[in-house]
Length: 292
Ligand code: C5P
Image 1 (cartoon, rainbow, N blue to C red):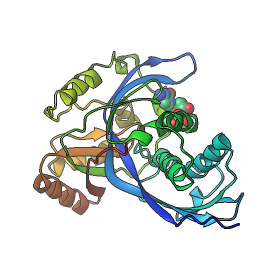
Image 2 (image 1 turned 90 degrees about the vertical axis):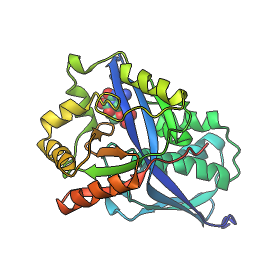
Image 3 (image 1 turned 180 degrees about the horizontal axis):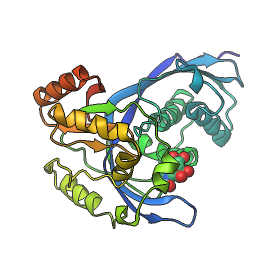
């Protein structure tokens, strides 16, 4: 029987880490994190199409991503297993968010698929149940169930919603290099660890409804120094953004993607144009509101 639900197209946003503190290494091999994460208006699209009972398939416009490891496909199988439904779906995934860039694209595709299928199939899972399913799929997936501005703890899966920050324009830049997340965590030096100072300070500003000065102290990423040391292409892209006029450039997550925040479109657009003219792969985008 073909499912009668009409097709549903949903946008899956990328994220940036406004702060990322690494508190220490855990016994399970993961690192204990404290971070303020923020969704941005750079989006993949997840399309859900009716399919015969029992059939779950995925077609991605990047063929390399169309295999059984795809997190959106795994999310669909996970929500079916958790609820016992046997309904079918054909998922189309249009990728825009750069892959393995520290922007959480795959995680967002998975969270968006969970939320969209929960609604599309009328499964009635609570937010807490969706968050638990999300945590099994990856450290960053639960954040994307919530979206907007949030405080992140644990290995990344403990999400506390924060008030929305004052919207920011962003120039996002992808250096022409791939980094390995496990290698970036392994390269951490003792000096890179902190008790979470930058995250706590930014969280206090956000809870008070203030936007702090956006500079290298308020927007901290403990993983950045190691990546800049080990991947010269990231340092080159960072320098190009600064030459283009960005006052503050920060790495997102384990990189290599960089972002520069702005309070006016005028300033962001100038840097975007200058960086593009210098041959950097850049997007002009902005922060977005939460899903929940
Ligand atoms: O959970 P996820 O699959 O995204 O993590 C990828 C890898 O990144 C982990 O296997 C681990 O090496 C590293 N990692 C970490 N601490 C975290 C998150 C990720 O060491 N909090």
